[in-house]
Length: 505
Image 1 (cartoon, rainbow, N blue to C red):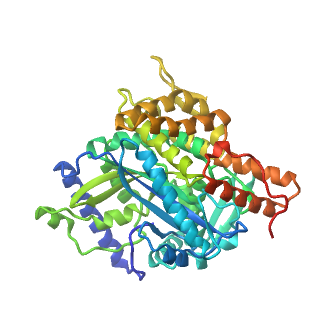
Image 2: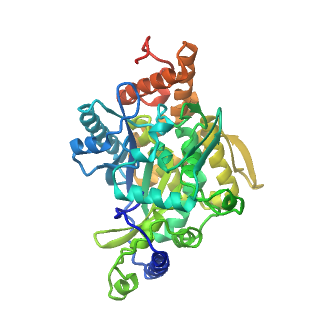
Image 3: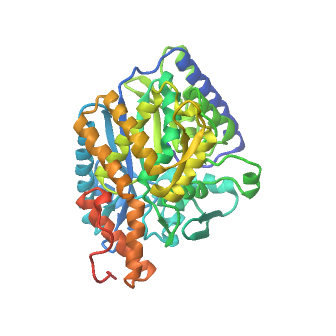
């Protein structure tokens, strides 16, 4: 949600000054790119996961401040609402047994956080959207007590100028309004970072966009919101609508939403940062004292603070990131399409699939983005969000005739993308045992057509058939999910249905 900021008011000149600073930052980025000042390849990846806090009854607990005090670790931070936390795993080199190491670190961190939450009668749940959330949970009074969240909410609400409308038509239809951005807090995600050189950035970003639909199809885990069964991955439409600064008139004019898949393949990282300046007004026009061009003239590395802050308020599903480590600038692709959960092994399997297939696609002699219209990638993403593992996607045909054809997502993943992911992980230098274990999880999900969203939906309907009310069925599904999540077996092995004969409460 952006850098730490101090809440305050902005006057008319602030936005003009900020726009000027943004242009200076963009010029500074151009100069850094021209001078080849960026870090050399280190094959570095990073991982962030947003989490939910619930009670034993499966209902959300607004306790993140107290839980974080007890965790007392820089690896854990606040997120938008008081039932959210975020855990950050330190960067790792993509090689050897990296995925086993990540899994062990993540299990240790989550178990520790869950124990600390347990001291307050709460627990950690790693899931895309908590099924038991109610509209009354997602109000501005439940936003985390952090200045930047209050300020961002105020600025998005002011830009919108009216209530936000949520309208998601899936298995069932949800329509409601909100006076704040709080419903966005329902979306808990996994963010996968990959450090890349400027020369490779466009190929990696284009590959990530092309494969985003397949990621969602096999990884969907967010079928419920406010008691309704919606899309298999309901985070994208919810995120877009709950942060939408455009009233209906601007939507009708074709103004772009701040939560955005994009509209074209790119040729450089500069394309994305430049689009951010051209299309999106500042939400947080907070200026840093640094003059980036003076810093460059003196041989230094500018922070590009305004560019970084502005970039953090444009919610691309694959986002460019500028950073500095040990005094050297670098670029990252931040992949944001995946929901949290269901288990550590599922999260790591999703990561292995992504890093492998993106490496392979980015190095193909005839890249997929030269053989598929961008509009097809965007439509694929929507189809995967709506239908999950049962989606049908458009993909380039093999052979010399070209064009695209429609194919089952599971067939595309099993027959084409998993073999590519194997090649990609081999190229990274990942141990075959790691590669086979985690890609095997993706293969089994495809074979059984079972992911987190499928399991949640099937278990919920089994609970309804047993006579539970909708609210009780959602709570019971959440409790069973939490139990199986902490047990740790991959979601495709979870038995459908509830064990408990009588619902709590």
